[in-house]
Length: 243
Image 1 (tube, rainbow, N blue to C red):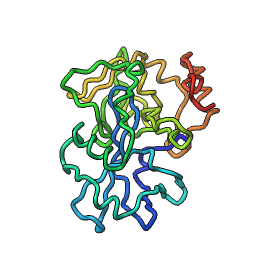
Image 2: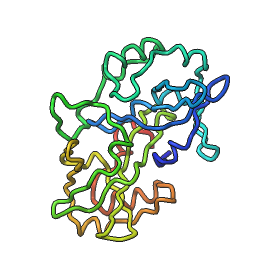
Image 3: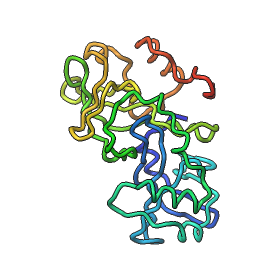
Image 4: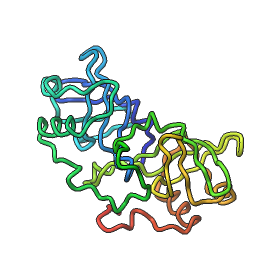
């Protein structure tokens, strides 16, 4: 299912014996836009603790009631390795967390062929949707707007990774009131320091692209029209992706 990142951040994380916390951020791999962790606010239960989970711990997602259900117990979470509150999650810390929960180390099988954005060797891999929100989207002939939201595919519930499928772009003063979608894998380059995403599209192409209603769900009918308009291959036709 395709769901807004803003909607996911309204969800609580439910354990086997009560509410663990609420999603406060989504951490993704900046090379391929695959979601790696949910950053969870434990509230008054574990004040001052930062908890991160693989999205694969989610067994069921009920967005109508804003609940993401896991098989984790509160005591198990309480005894998990601590994560620094204001620092990126280091690979060493990721290893500690994976070993504690007996999770598979995703970085052992990272598919770099899906990355279309070069990065410096010292650039961190994990990015925050909260930090990337607001980045400027630059077309070949000028700016088209800024990132206002993300559309996430919770495909992990079907056996494939959670992934950011689209950037929701607010076209601002250029096209007042219009929002458009841009798949992040279409980015030709990203300047993480200058907060700019460069795409190989023209402003005219974006202006005439299918409009997106931020209050509506993205369905397959809309996606077919969208990909037909741009003449790009459809991601759901990739080998191994659920139809």
